[in-house]
Length: 213
Image (cartoon, rainbow, N blue to C red; front, top):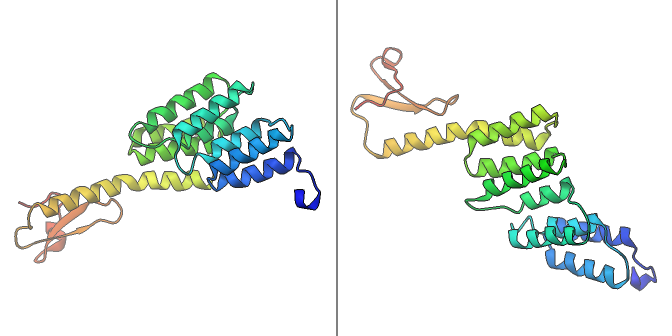
């Protein structure tokens, strides 16, 4: 734009920063913010939130918290996008506790979580194997009248599949511990993920869920 003698305005900077942030280009996003200020254009909350969004792909919690604090320092109150972006930066063993704390802070500030917010916390809960918490989040969404979207449906399907995966993992571990005694055979029930056992001589009459010893 400058090469074409067109001076970028706040909208142009916002579009450029949004594109950079979605690609995880935090340094470039910050550079555009500084350039914008050098041109005496005052950033608004959407520009500052772009820096938060840029931290999500790399899970850079420290940088995200710094950007979140900077947003407040400039006199803005975080909105749902800012809170959600911060949640998306959490990773590691303590991520769910942090995500829940931010969600609680949102509610205390009367900032209404969106479906994107709940999806972000759901991702953390499922990643940590916190099945009960994930189910609670789904119920909370319904209670608050937050409509689910395609990503929510995919996450809840993943949640439903998790018990099957754990059951299959446990069955494989049991299998590794020793061979079945003759004449028993085994297979996996596709509806539950559990293994069942039978004898060739009478498959229907000998089927059992208990591993023969």
